[in-house]
Image (cartoon, rainbow, N blue to C red; front, side, top):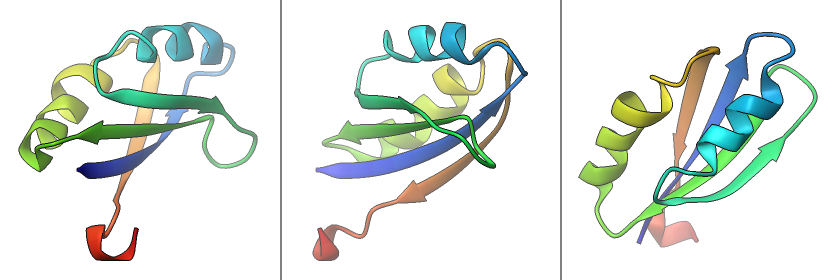
Length: 79
């Protein structure tokens, strides 16, 4: 199982609509609003790392009002 965490910044005041859209994407297991440098953290899981690599630019980054993303891949041997 491949797991990545994606830290997301979005336009001010659009956190809730972005969170609602993220919750509809297949493979996203958790969506959490946070305070700090980032606005949202998501946990994305798939049996295939290539699928995760495709989901981020094709589905997540295309959501309106997302400004930046930072992706952290989990080291499987250290889970």
